[in-house]
Length: 427
Image (tube, rainbow, N blue to C red; front, top):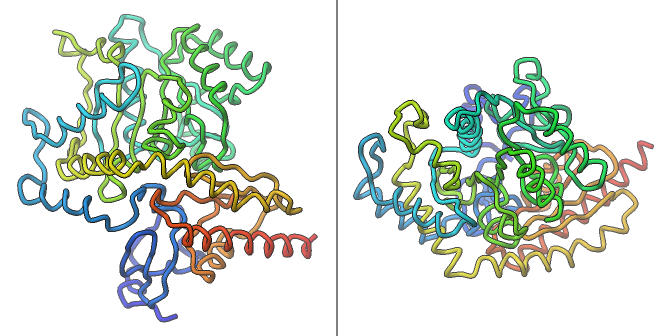
């Protein structure tokens, strides 16, 4: 297929994410998006199975989200929050306080999930300084976890299986342990917290470790983490950038699990994939340590576009859609459909495991394969699916229709069979 001039020329100047530019195939050009369909510049159409890195929960080009952005654009696109205020940011913070569990009542807005996690980590460290406990510079995180690509967040990602092992010597050493799923790992978590009083917080992706391969755990695991944090007087951070806003089958994984953290990060689906926006939402207990006449106890953090008016207006519209369209109900139906459609893969000889929770499905193979070739094969079958290592996964829009879902699941079945044949031949 002939690529447009802008794509060929631009490849000499753009630097793409997670890409070895010298060897990677040329990306497919997209000219238009609608619903769950990507229309390519050559006229082909693909059913999108990943929702632009898990953000487009209402589908592409939703008229309500666009209308909210345009209306706000006409009135007030952006004004700094330093000394000034605007309705979208204040209204969104108020609304998030009503939607998040417990006393998670105070939102700090930023532009990306990674920065939201950075803010959460920064709050955790300063909390102990503000309360007179002294410096606690370390964090405890879990194997298989991913929390972002900025420097502090890289340090709490899985150091071996993640994408950031190259930077190991440049990053602060953290405590990385197994998720507490049995007596041994529960004991190891508690022992680590007991023996290391310099830990400011524990951070976890609740219920699903996303970029680590859509690994799933249960509410009991989160209860063990919460109990350990309470026992050892450590802050608990839930990274809900991926799991929040309906993805697991409840508005937040914390609600689904019945476990409330001290700090929660939200992003990705917050604006339905229209504009960048994320937040660190903090409990009243944590925030109280910063609310003081002493100016040195203030949180000294301020992204230029914090509380971006356009993004906050779109987020309000996205939350409206979640409520008005029964998005949570759609996710639960989608969970049942994904479970049914992918169940036959459990018997395939090259399939290690099939996992489904909410609007997330993962088919993990028991052998390696060329991810670029697999991605090309999915495109050839009219789908856009991007495997993670040995894991082929779906994180579709909540609005995907049954016939569109069939295109995705049938493509996965065919590609799994083809990859199994290749593995058998190679063996």
